[in-house]
Image (tube, rainbow, N blue to C red):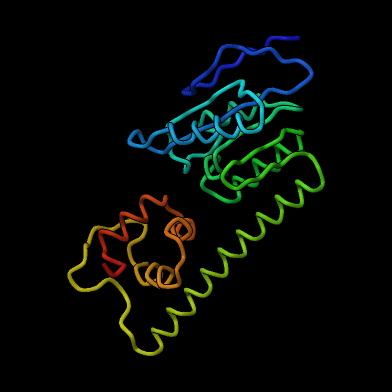
Length: 224
């Protein structure tokens, strides 16, 4: 048995653990702002571990936006320390990063290094096996295709409305403060009319779901 020293800047760390034949099980939790709580994610992971009969050896937690590259977060140091046979447990894959490409890059790297990744919410268990790699690829492809199709349909619908002479843009008297979403009200309305979830709309627009929810509410983009 060898002792593994472990330290993650900005993370919550347990004392060094002993590593034997079995790998170390790491849990990573993250929220974007200090107003959010890590408690729900911790509960999910502890409950999952209890149901599956294993103990989480090391906890790493941080409060930072997922828009920042994982290399500039505590997650980067954690990923660097993972080795063959280890397991990374997360509440959901979005905790790893906001960008689909970044998340899939992380997953690919970990599978290449024979590190298992378990995402509780999605029910995914990815490791260095053919089935796991096929599953990860299918998940990535489906998400990207869905995103592109929704964006394409939205652009086509806007083009048809414009061609029909319908006025586009913010309604008269709406808020004038410019944001990343300014000028995209019609796209957002169409997505919401198609019953696309707010979280999915946020991913399409490249913003956090809380930002999108606040924008929808402040611009009154849905009927009350």
